[in-house]
Length: 87
Image (spheres, rainbow, N blue to C red):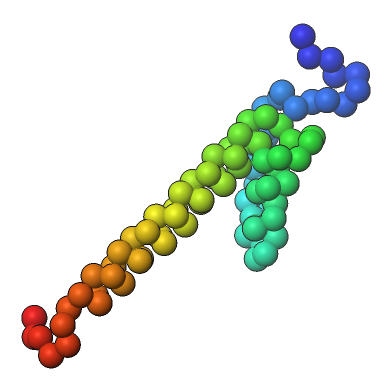
C-alpha cells in the first residue's frame, strides 16, 4: 500500500499536461541532453516516466553504437577500392 502522507506520489499515472510539458522541455536545445538523465535517474519522477526515459537512453546508446560500427564499416569498404578503377 502506498503512503501519500509524505509526498511520495511516484506510482500514479503521468497526466497529459505533464507529457506536454515534457515534450516542450525536450524541444529546448542542450536541455534535451540533460533532462532525460534527470527524469530517468532522479528522485521524484513517476516510475512510468522514469522507465520511459531509461528506455530512451538505452535506445540512443544502441543507435550511437550502430552508427559508429556501420560508419566505420562503410569507410573501410571505401578504402578497399583501388585508385583508378572505374565502377
